Length: 361
Ligand SMILES: *Cc1c(COP(=O)(O)O)cnc(C)c1O
Image (cartoon, rainbow, N blue to C red; front, side):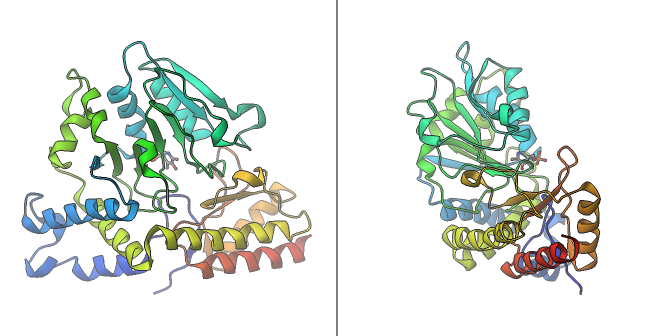
């Protein structure tokens, strides 16, 4: 087996232990003579997986009892639509912090349902900085306040979250889900596509505060309504059973590592190594993001020329490191350092960066 260091932004590297457990159990799950994905989703075996996955989300975040966890199809993108469809109050609009490519998509869908008031617009400086979260003010009476905790493409991450008072705080945590502790009681709703820190693509994890379920209009088609999914523990229809199973395996692994506190420390170490390589390169590498809000999950950087960037990506691949090309919309390079990336992977990248700069600087 030859596993390389995979710096892809998503789908992305997952814990080897979780993958190996799934492999070992795949053909014959718990002596039932079939795989888990061939079983009824109403079977006791799947039911146990489903509820353990939900409980892991609750345990890792220390969720109070008035929060529900859901596993839904459609990725984070469906949540761009479901959030306004369920939570937008007639004539009240919503607040949104425009911090990059993903916030833009959330804004576009919300604007189809109601007014979107920008409480922050980072487009003037190309989304390279964030204000102090404490200075953000929610509009009185707004339906909710939407933010994106980590911009996966631009590489900016909120270090803190605002106080939005009576206005429910809604957060797209797709790319830093379960990577750090967060004050969960500040949030009305958290959502994340699973395929960055939590598992394979094909499921979104949604955490919602009970009282918000009352808002879902009865006119919504069933699948689009939180009020339909939440009381049924996401078993209204056939849930994405394989993604949920892998989410369980991945979060069990995370819990064994020491949960969110351990994840936070490892994220500091990994990102510290790569940002250190940038800072110590004498200007060969440049990170365009303001140092106060550099992402610990997605480190973006440029080299002196696009030609060097191409060579960097190709030579890194030859040295056992893949997925370092920046998003096609912005170019440059990007190293995604999710939970399952071992510190040695970041170390290997930092060393390679130093060596490449020495040869080409
Ligand atoms: C990846 C990502 C999404 C989109 O997720 P899909 O599952 O592809 O819909 C949304 N928001 C952020 C911050 C992301 O990183």
